[in-house]
Amino acid sequence: MCGMEKYTDFLIYDINAPRVHHRALTGYLRRKWSRNPNELKRIVYNTDVSPYLGALPPQLRARVPREQIAWVTAEFRDKLEDFLIKNAPDLRVMDADKVYELPEIGDLFGLKCNLMARGINVYGVNPWSGLLGFVCKLSFPEIDAHYALKLYYDHIPEVTHYSHGPWFEVATGLAANRAESRDNVPMYMASLKYEKYLLSQWAGDKDDGVPQRINEHKIFCTRTEEDESRNRRGGRRIDWGETYLTNYGAMSYPARKIYRQVMNMDAAAVHRSIDGAKNSFQKRDVANALELAELVAWYDDNQPLSQFLYKIQNQR
Image (cartoon, rainbow, N blue to C red; front, side, top):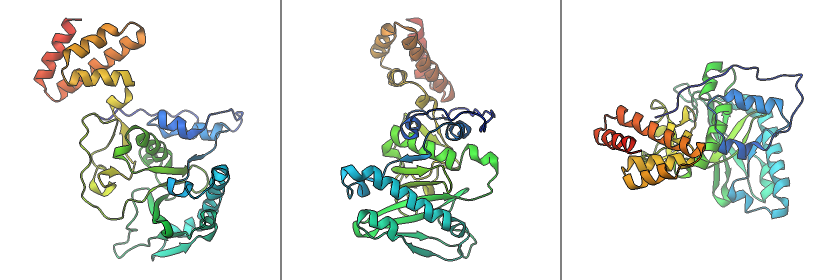
């Protein structure tokens, strides 16, 4: 089950506030996911944090001497940003497919580089587009390295930003990749400045029909209406719109472990965990795990699990 919706409408940008220090966003967002994108906006707008996230894809990093990685990464971001500032308005409304040659980016790695953009087809849509954004294919053909560069449309209703768009998807993509790498196409880089983008591994432009991995204990889940095969490749998620932390995923790692013990109905393991809970944090983990298991047992009408929980509670 996905977590409940929680929104806040505090002031996002205080122009008079000092730019306080904040640690780098990439690691922070991988470990601390929030459903409300305004929290991320407040960090970017009101602190000195860099709005550029992630690192070069491994195929490109392998082409760069270790001592030059930081410089090349910065140059890559700058040159891609310059290209997007100049060309993104046209990319959003193109009426025909087009391939751009990007020697400024390719030269950083001693390779050719191009970007393929799709135009509006006979049905009046960009075939690589979604609700709020569209994808271009950034390629380094000499090493068969291809990436999905997701860009975003202008003038989108604000309400959709709570489950789509760069502020939501960048944070969710980073966190989901860290939590469940087997279930998500690798996301490498992103920018939350100027022409915002998300760069991930290219996984193909056609629905391949490969089912997602069976995972009884999901940390992230995608809303049913969005959880379609068109948003997956090789069974992995390629789009992070309407993807949320589950109730299971929101618990601490120790609480998840206890929850799995309960769901496996391993009485001995559960009792060891309960008996070993000495401080308030450990007792909280036990309580959270049992509470979620009870909710699942009720929701699924799982009588064996309900009976198991009843016995556990009466033996505490």
